[in-house]
Length: 125
Image (cartoon, rainbow, N blue to C red):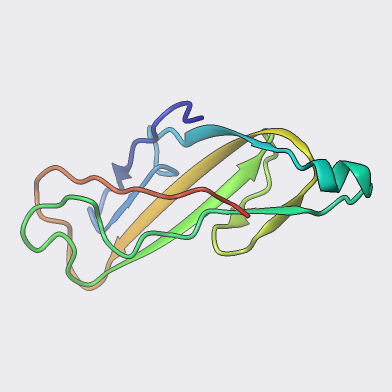
């Protein structure tokens, strides 16, 4: 279940947008891992969670996607530890709160003015 949507803010040089920039809150969601087989066999690592970064903005002004790289990190249950989005984290059965941050870096250049939107998918496999 999606909690809060994140907000990507620009750095002073306008070449980085990210929810980890000043004033940019993280996105959050609640996930539940539940498997009868895992419970019956007392398995402790049936699921993994990851948040691979998007390859492009969902929407951006002309030129906004040019020379842009994306990275994501996530945290489970309020942990201060940033886990790279492409690194699956094993979880046991249970309910977890996940916080997700997306960063877009434009190099070379700066982001053109306009509205941007990015989406990160939380994978629970």
